[in-house]
Length: 207
Image (cartoon, rainbow, N blue to C red; front, side):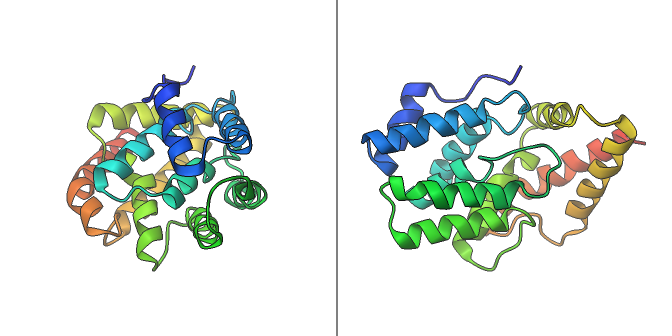
């Protein structure tokens, strides 16, 4: 069972309505996304993940309607291991965002951010901040990181330990080889050192 969301539904819904309007079409999108984030194959990519990113965006002083939309939509379609997740999520967002109170420019920014989340690369400062938000879990306190890693393993419960370990080690080593895991100063200062310590500890566990 996925862990309980960070926000109450009332708090989350109020933030949604502030960003996208409280009209019927907006609430229909909200309900659909909440249903998607509660799908049985999800253990990390859940409402808890959405809540943590929304909360951290506020803490970082970068929250905005387009960023909230990117947070909600970037994992809206999620099948563990499917390389089409980001593209499918972008297609869903493209079809759906017309129902929300977002400008055309904001909608385009959301789609750019979703596609960038596949490889976590961008030169757009706003998108870079979104990517850092999505990677912030790597720099969380050790206990939260361990739970995150366990939840990711549960999402890939359909594959063997050996196969999962190969893919996970490739991901961890790729992150650690980067000169900077985080692309923006605020996130680099707060999360870089802990992220490297967490990932190095996880790698040792595969030895």
